[in-house]
Length: 427
Image 1 (cartoon, one colour):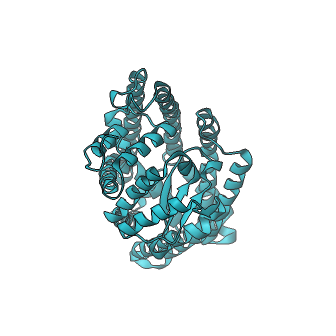
Image 2: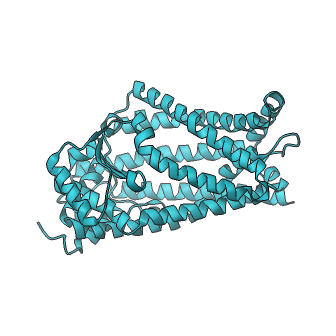
Image 3: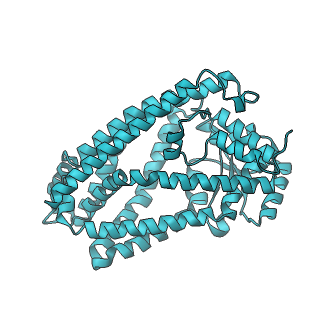
């Protein structure tokens, strides 16, 4: 009975989430089409009609493609679970791998085969997005040679890091008793903290080249800003983001003393020094308001709750049966439980995602306000407009779509808030 209830709940949640996603996506596209013909009055002096329509067309192209990918993703998820995909894969590996190579090899094979099949199913969508949509709108700089090199490096990193971590988790699940989930959570948190330290110097350089910031005047300006803000970084670097995409960005990476500031070369090519300083001041605002620590704390708390829930569900036979899988008798079910949990939880978590998006937008407003205190609000507003135009971000998103999905406030709301700042004065 419990298995049947879970099956109904999962199917209902999957259908409901897919319906809401389709409804929101079609609302967004209709809203963008309706406003495609004219630049919003607040932007008529800064954004051309051609740029506005390009952003609308880019949004519509991604939206239409998103409808297809959402439908296929839901069908694939249904196929893996209630239609027996994981069950068939598991039975095949139980018969072919477990008797010869043992329980750990069987469980790692299950996770690996699932990951490979999922990647193959996702590949056509990834390729179409990169080489058709992004290419059509002038954003893609990726060559096939670079794409294949990235894929090979990504697979190598996954094997060298992902498999040992998976093996550790499976070993803890099988050896640490009823409170295994607490030990597994501790190991997972330690791994995440280690990655924060290693990523900037070990992993990221495998994919991109990082050069010290060569512009001395900009370096002096940025260092003065960081000194005013009480922020210390190990270095200022420029990343060759242009070899993959025309999109621009800047970010902080690392943890503790290993923090570094990274600018995309595309960002430095598009913004003035004052605008770069304002964008960096915005990022520093996140640190000043402890948004990064708060998000890490939230991640730690949510992951602890997730591990605890997995610890309970993995001991319930109805959890497996309700998602289309027969628990194994001759082998541990830990990898099965982990897979099913990772597939099912996002379906239910979708309905609370607007709360996290709202919190993120609140943090962005706070970071903007801090940037106006430490730099020029006019420069920040100008940088936001340039980035919106260069990234073909629509200026007329559907308000409900924004409330549900947007982690950053739309341009109209951000610029209106900036206009109220004392440091944002008419030019």
